[in-house]
Image (cartoon, rainbow, N blue to C red; front, top):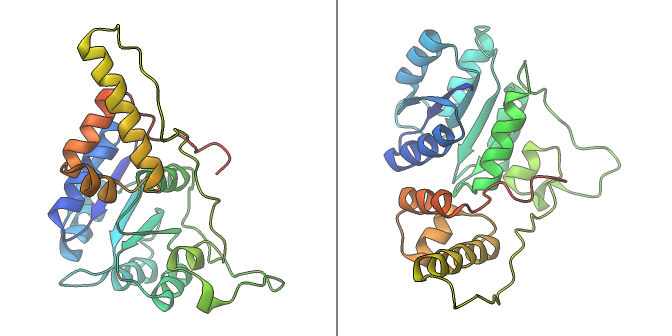
Length: 226
């Protein structure tokens, strides 16, 4: 079990990440701005920080720089944003951020990034794209820049659009099988994005996550080989 600090000014994001990571067995502390993040960093010494870039008082990159310059960047930091530019990603990488998650954050990328972050004892060193790479900065996504110009291959979540069900089962069992296949299909179709699946299925994200756990949907499927 790890102590993870989640810093984001959006209540919905904090609640969703907290619930997911709590279910994974981690202890979560929440902060909605840089001031609370500083206090939490001093108080609990987190093993990992999920840090939003755009916040009302001090932005995440400035806070990251502050921790780095004062010797407090002793834990892996994963940056999060839905509006970051490539320049921002490059800057955060140079300061010491180990990864970047673009919002809406897919469940698979969140769990993979957290797993990788918790295997680190020190922040990730900046990664420069290889000189022989054919990828140009203008062609990269923000996440690609944070990973040195490459991204993991797409995750195959598996299920096909067609399924067969045994109709002689009790209604509850048959319904659970159908719902599991239904959600697995939409997770695969939407690339694991909880936000898009919630929009497609008409469920609130926290309720959707609980439903997936209840049905036994493998939320980390495809992590092998990533």
